[in-house]
Amino acid sequence: MSLLTPSFGLLFWMIISFAIVFGLLAKFGFPVITKSVNERREYIQQSLTNADEANRTLENIRQKSEELLNDARKQQQSILKQATKEAAQIIQKAKDDATIQGKLKLNEAIRLIDLQKQKAIGEIRSQVASLSVDIAEKILRHQLENTETHDKLIAQLLDEIENSDTVKN
Image 1 (tube, rainbow, N blue to C red):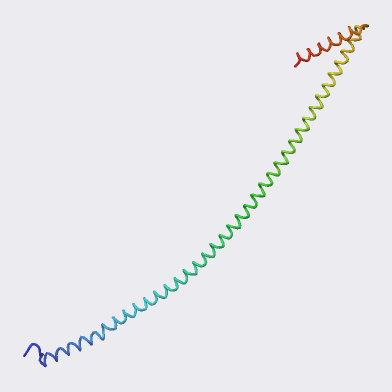
Image 2 (cartoon, one colour):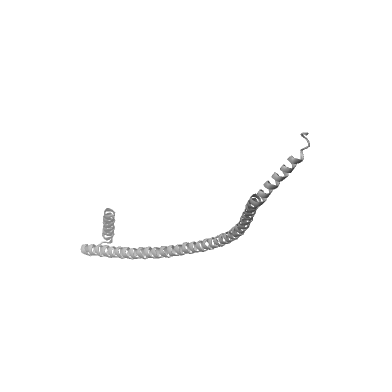
């Protein structure tokens, strides 16, 4: 027998062995393998379905978040505009109040100055009247007949008054 050509008996037993192994594999091995492949295929299909659903959900969430961000930006701009407007109103009101208060204080100061001026004028008038009475009294007391002496006396009295004012100040 040659090594390259098998004998009929060997070929017979190889076919029987192959049939038994194939039968056992068909009965026990192939169903387990096909079941495992089918389960893996279903798992992959389910994973793809879940991934698609997750992508759709993620897209919906992204769109909603963009809408919320846009709404938040609009509200922020609205709030900033309102705050700016209110700040301008508050500043204007403060300016108006300050102007009014300044005018009131100025008017009060002018009134006080006028009051002190009137008081000072009254005092000056009182002093002038008192000085006039003093001069007249001194003139009448001397009863001068000579005008020259009379003029000298008036000049002297005015000098005295002037000196007394200088001393007081």
